[in-house]
Amino acid sequence: MGVRAAATRFVRAGALLGLVVGLGATAATALSAEDLARVSVEPSAKVVWVGERFELDVKITINDELRRDGWPQLFAQKLDVPVQLEAPWIDAPHFGRVLPWASDPDTSDSIELSFAREAGPALVVWASGTSICGRDDAGEPQSWSLLTYRREFVAERSGHFTLAAPRVRYATTASVEHDVFNDPVAVDTRFVTVEGKSVELEVRALPEAGRPASFSGAIGTFEISTEATRRELAVGDELELVLTIKGDRELDALAAPRLAESTGWHLLGVLADTTVAPVESLERAPDRSPPRRVFRYHLQATSTSVSRTPAIEFSYFAPGEGAYHTLTSETIALRVAAREAPTEPDEDAREVPRPIHWVSGVGALVVLCATIFVWRARRREPVDPRPDRARGALAKLKSALEQRGANPETAFTTFVADQLDIATSAVSGHDLARRLRDAGASPELAERAARTLDVHVAARFGGAAPEVERTQLLALAAELDAALRATALRRA
Image (cartoon, rainbow, N blue to C red; front, top):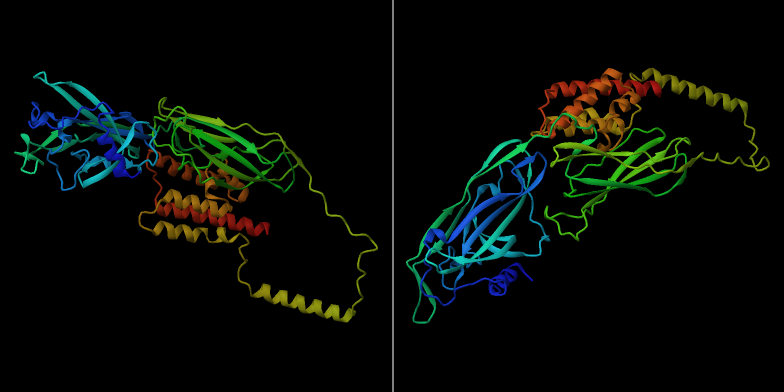
């Protein structure tokens, strides 16, 4: 059923919903024109945190006179709800961003209605209708419809914000008469604007005190579980460790949690499942399973001393408590065996080397030695033995920082990932300094690089802006690149 069809069904089924619509009356209601509609704003929370999702409900109460046959419309296109909502912060919020429409509303009374916003007629895909019956000051029975226009937002800037009072505009008439063709005609039409009340919203920056190193921006309430694809393997074999995260918020932007420091394992990479159970409302149906996201860690065993999978630390911020929590996954017992050495061929099966002329061998050896000597003499500097990613990391960083609107945190994270030849999702963590030291950086340089990255990550969650200039960031990167290159040359 299409959008328009669903909307029309709601209007025509008004009697089934308990709506009292006065069709056939020729005189307007005894209420004043300004009393035919009201509007208000109700946030799901008046205090939210940077990165937190929340909802704003615009509640529009209209007298059913506005929907009677022949009542004047605002536009040439007839609307199911003949009102125009004016609230600029709905589509362009100054405190963050608005999320796309939910494709499958979670409430059983959700319907599809059309009405006008500032930009003109628009389709509302999340409105719920409720009937309200009462009497006016003159004692006449009145029927009202309460419509809820809901949008979901993400707070991105801290501070105190005032949501301007919403306004509703509609047409009214003194009476509805019938022409010679018995069609209803509005008499003495005029336009009325009703204004609600403004709402104060406070967005708080996530606290820096107590923020775990493994925190990557998750806000809400979560639980985790792990499973391994195999329980027996040999040194050098690959193991897939599957982490499942369930929560009360949408998880599509969740970063892969870091592995706890563990010896005997080498992280090859992390893949995230693209199918994520969506959350369209913070008020989920009781029988709906919570959203989940799955991360697959590809590990390589490097020692027979390993007896369990590494733990995974996942930190999140609980907005209701205003505190951080860290979950540590259970480790899984397994057995890592030594890799068997390749079997030697039988003595009888070995090929007996054929004798060669000793003069030809000596001549070839002389030519080879002379070639190597000339090549080494002409070579001005040693060749960088690092992977292509590491060799081009510094130039890539310089190019990224020269771009307008460049994100220093993203650029420097990519630089470190290229230097260590790992995925960007595996960079941040409490053991970054140790990994840089293992790659050849001095302890002081490794700590400085890790601290610089932590400062930029903290700024993303509402913390103090980093004081590191781009020139300083490039200088640090150049120093790190030179140290890792020199170590690679020595090890080669």
